[in-house]
Length: 358
Image (cartoon, rainbow, N blue to C red):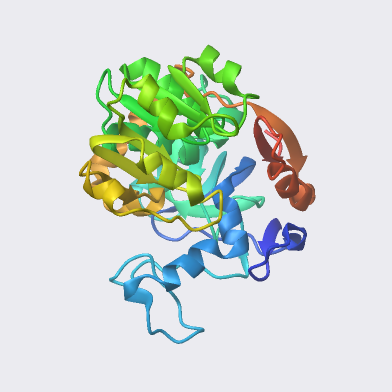
């Protein structure tokens, strides 16, 4: 079968190559999915560049290991971070062809499903194997395209706003990179649940679209001072909650926007640069900063709680709250071009890989 493979960590996306590899066989509790569609997300690039692996090497439980020793997402060393060679792709949708032993897996045979994948058994290949627990059946009311984007952005947006930050009705939520697919989903969630969104973008290109979607305020950092604008918009109170996927200097500005007992969640590093903070900017408002990585957060939750979250996300997807535009579609053989297109700063929608026919 065809598979988009990475041979070694690299900064050159042109090194992603389509190779012929054996069709994988599902083990107990697993399903084999014939892939139809898979989007390209910023998190996929972290597995190309080795960003996650390098970051985990600095974590306390991975220190003092030999250079070629595996690193782990958890202190118990039960969840290793994969290293190439491996198949790329973090999510997608397809048809379950066969299943390993176990009722949960067998009941999915023949079903159209959204899956959360990731290296070493990624979704950018004709077939992949995942745990049945990482699959959600798709009703007819959810299209293939929207179903392929079910996990990374919709689940992250829902979990951050409803489970991690728990933004109250009427409260302010500051969102950086608000023009992204996830940022737009957060705006819709704000209208649905009654919290206010203060959207941060670099320039005015996306401002009108975000206001049309329902953003309560938009700040353009290329020509506006973020803390000053937040002070004006919130009448000097600051925001109670913030979520930042950019990092760098912008994070330091976001910290200065937090109100008393304000909470900031960091869930991305698009700027790829360090952040310098004045510690008293946290001390004085008794503010809180936490990090978030969806797979790790999900591993810490009880199965019944996760099931409830996925059901709620499916319901909201049917209602259109996570509708995401697809700007370009490529074949699997064009994967390197597709990844390069996803890095285009002027892109307005998701880049999609069409892997198989329906």
